[in-house]
Length: 209
Image (cartoon, rainbow, N blue to C red; front, side, top):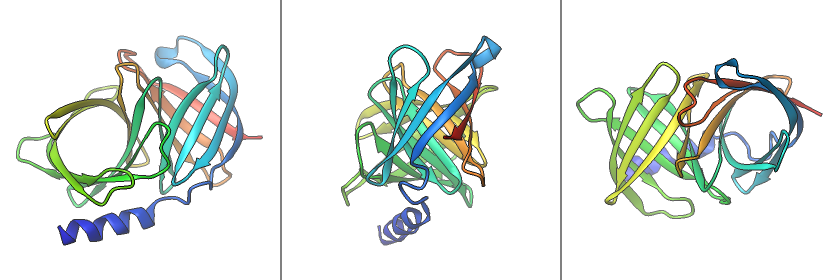
């Protein structure tokens, strides 16, 4: 597993600096399928190597978890969720991930396993050096990518959107949703989002206050 360990170190070093996007933002967005517009605020706080995300767009605030890879911030929200940020690497995928409320990052590498969309995965849980293994199936649809992991006899399902070559994924409870932002040079977060069963993609722009 030495090759995997070297990869994990390189991937962590390539992650965006935690706290780099911390701040309060004004948001303007559209719902999936163009079913309405909304506004409000977004607060991004460093939480160890991850991010705590809070949206306030009317009603009760919504909390999420985020990880950054390069110029992309991937977030998950809507329940007890985890977030994964995959980027392609020579036919495989490398990932950083975090669980709701967590401050450490896990890692994962997904290698093609024959049939299109099927992968063998190996990774580490947040804060643990032990390596886990399993399988992953990705199915890209018109609006999003669905994912299904089988690790240690447990099955996890997720939904993902790609921004700037990074696939941001939310997994966990059936209500878990995903928002993925491109961090522009001026600090603005230019994002897309969706939730299971939405049948479309929403947009959101968050401007630093």
